[in-house]
Length: 126
Image (cartoon, rainbow, N blue to C red):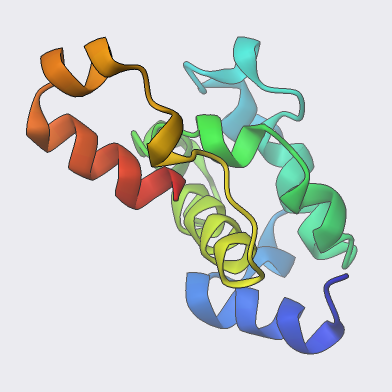
């Protein structure tokens, strides 16, 4: 369970003032990954605003964010959603959660994937 202290840490990690978001939805409208997400980007921000960090941490969305910055470019309030998504991933990993287990990667992925892609993916997902 995420306490209010962990919520404050989440906001400290991201450096973003999510309270300035007024839910216009431009971030979700411009997100290339939105069709794959269980929660739209603006919904994740709303959960964080409401202190429902547990629900945001349970979402697949935080792992699907490509950090392409399209949402940040569209945001009229200057909220960097990729920073918030990264802080959610970091918070979950610090709590002991894991999205990807490197030991379970198929052998063909380990043999054929570019090393840089593996390192970048493992940094993001473990």
